[in-house]
Amino acid sequence: MSDRNNKVLIVEDNELWSESYKQWIGNHYQIKLASNKSEALETCDTFFPDLIILDLGLPEIKDGLDLLDEIIKKGQDSTVIVVTSFKEHKYALEAQRKGAYSYFSKSDESLEEELPFLVKQALKMQQLERENKELRSKLQQKIHFHDIVSVSKQMQLVLDTVERLKHSVEPVLITGESGVGKEVIARHIFKQSSKLNHNFVAINCGALPPNLLESELFGYEKGAYTGALKMTKGKIELADQGTLFLDEIGDMPLELQVKLLRILETKRFFRLGGEKEIAVDFRLISATNQPLVEMIKENKFREDLYYRLNVIPIHIPPLRERPDDIPAMIDYFSEKFCRENGITKPKFTSRLIAFLSHVHWEGNARELENTIKRLILSNQKVLDIEHLPPDILEASNSFLDQALASELNLEEVSRMYVKMVLEQKKGNKKEACKALDVNYRTLMKKLA
Image (cartoon, rainbow, N blue to C red):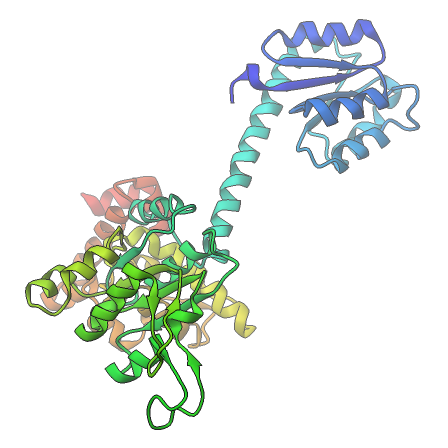
């Protein structure tokens, strides 16, 4: 925000002083004046000042602090600098305790030089606090509301695409390996869509045999087959006016693919054993870990259905391609698990975090989360590499495996570890020193 966009309200009953403040601050800001409490509160409601210079000695105010209380209660995020005379100096600290940024005295001989600097610093601090607040808010929303931890550029691109789908109802096809969070992204799309007040209906096409999958999708009439004792609505009908999520769509049998295609084209279907055509309207989100294009070539997936599904493609990269996300995910999974189970959260050493960031997570986020739970249940206050489950150590393609395979000595393993941490910190030696808990001289010695 430029200085000219900042709004400053000067609350001062002495016209000479208010004009002096205005002149000293300069013409870099939008400035308004108020000479009493009612004017000040009314201006706050219409002007929304970023900064308020408030004289604590207004004649109508009991102790100079009640107006400050009312300004703070408004919750407009205005930064307040209070003005004191010699006899009111005792109120300055109380004003800061209540929330004022700073104060100055009218008796200060260097006030003309110091006031512009104080105002500039106060507005700069306010802008930083607003940016931090906005960043925390976005992070909280992404992590706790949508269950998504995103730090890497790859996942930010995914979330940017999702953000653009707020007002879209076109079919979405989410691809990615098992465990990367395809359903999490699908629910994220649903939660911000215009169909939020309706159902989100999910079914895993690979978890059911073909005949059961068909009845689960389409529903059935009473007597449609042996055991159909009453009419039952299927997932498609339950998703009407909402969102239908078909997970592992690549496992759907070809004969059901034909029926699904017809529904997408006509928005109508029959329950099993039914004679009445039912109209439906839903937003379709599909997901798969299979290469559908290759399956089309092998006649295992219908090409016409693929193009119906793949209107908006979203690919979620595997965890091994976005190691920057792993430290944040470790923190999130550990905090979540400890909170849900009433456990004190243990400390993860920087060495363990660096190690986990270089594991080849075949099961992606799901495997990482399970590993975090197992680590915490080892009941250690400080967790290090030695506390990892044996299967993770054995399966890892990290520096430790390379060290063991090459029969390196301790010094060589140490150098390999330093190199790995430096790579993780993108060559930033200061950050590497923090992660390794060594001084700069020791780091340079290792690198040499």
